[in-house]
Length: 332
Image 1 (cartoon, rainbow, N blue to C red):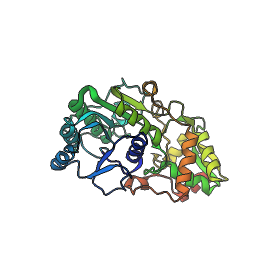
Image 2 (cartoon, one colour):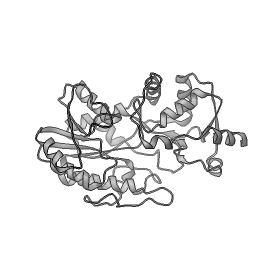
Image 3 (tube, helix red, strand yellow):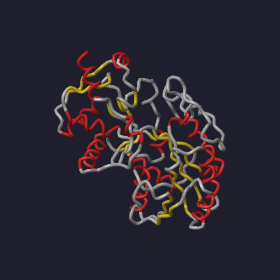
Image 4 (cartoon, rainbow, N blue to C red):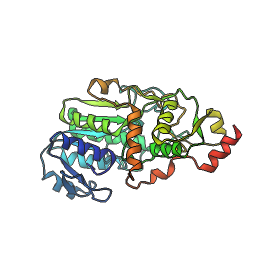
């Protein structure tokens, strides 16, 4: 479900490389179909289109990467329509489904937000401090819809931040461009803070593995080792050849200047649990994560080679304006 950009594209390419027969289902508007797939175009929110898709089956598994902006009732519509034509369903969800994310460390046993499987787009709310999120409620309802349709053959993958070639949100490309520009770079202290972004190709490999396997239930998908924020920026400077120098600002200083966490300063958030996601269950089930330095390097190679993602409105949210950064740096 999806299959033309970023994670969906990586999953299709990974499955093809393993000799699988791959069908992709999408509207045909957001990207180019991967060569070698059987492309079926349709709208997953239209029952008639789903029934036409079901006639192309059966399949060993469905891997759903295209439900991030859909309400639970639309996830349920697709899962129910395909339940008789697929053995299992691998669902790309998010750590935002947890009740206490990002305030507390997470395991798969952490309490979840509650949302019915038939909820529409109005269900849920976003808290005053940005947690929980309406998005998290909606994704929790989507998980419930899949489990109701597929039972023990439902696999729920809950990534945090996914980076890598093809990234459309723009977190890593922004830092790479900022490193290339050089000079004094505003950076969120402490430099030793570890972050856990995971490479899109590693998520794709794990999703394909789970589609073929017998694993059940939920898996947190995060880098088990991570990298320090200082190490991350060092890699950005190294691969771009930038001559920048990070200037580490205390979170209280950034707050005084109203720097928005997560967006104006990509990957920075002060909550205790945001980078404390336990991924041991996924690692034990076969998740393998390359060093984050490799993700930084390969993303720059893609970006420098005129790599451009599918246009997405979230991209405009990321990165601090140069004038604001200069003003803050001058005050330090």
